[in-house]
Image (cartoon, rainbow over all chains, first blue to last red; front, side):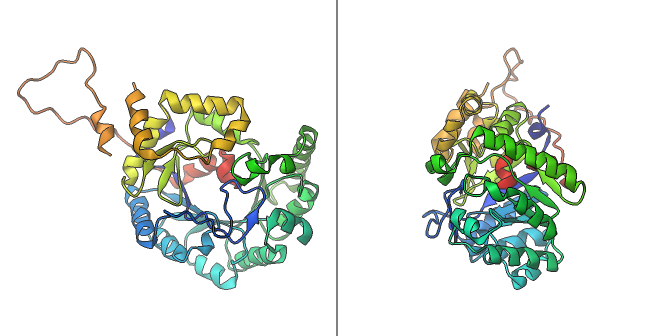
Length: 325
Length: 51
């Protein structure tokens, strides 16, 4: 039996609480940037209702991300509602606003990880990829996280712009006290898809990068976990066809995606309860349409570029259910 | 999300009770999601792991 058919609620909710961001990264898979808040994002009251739903159904782990979650005025209200109910949290941030005060406030919550992006090891490279960002500020954020006693996780999105600094970033992450370093093949989604020809490393460069990761993994041993498998988004999707992950991806407007790599939306948390969204997710992963779309993306990564052209839930969900045996 | 319930049809060949209120469907015995099972699920998804 599939994991999702055994569980009464998701194991994990990845909640993009805004598309707004204070940076304009070339590789962004959510197409976030300053002023890119969606016109129909959940407001504070609606977001709190979603948080209450997450608590009610018993989700054990939630990631708050974006965009940049710390630009949302009610970020702490959400985090404290979830954390106060005993839900473990992961916070994804670019680190530009994560100072000592923010870290100390987070440290009062059950935080499993604060993940900060370090997409370069020199200011020049970092700012070329993370336009508008300061590497020094991101490093300060990492130190603030560790000083507050929080677990630090680093992510690195490799591109033609920053690949040459990958080894230094790995070493920097270790020196900053990260317990884990995440990376993988650049995802052809969102802004990255639009700028693909400027960003995509060659196959030879990918092979070299994977060798580097394998060597670094052996060298670091238990000093820092180095996560790079599954390497490609398509690999994850292929695995999902066998056993869909027990996770829900919630968009800033409350829509629930069937998979990050697909445009399909299975529920709307403005309208649906979270347990109903979980039912719809399970049903969606049995539908011919979703499974066929997933297989198509596995066969042709260029289709990932359509993943952010979301298909509205109202009609799609009914269609999906009508196909279900 | 009433649409889900509306699509549930009785299996073919099942005897249909007449003039009797239908028995409630057996509720599945759901397992409670546990935090210790989370990591593997999260790390298996590149989009979530390193966005």
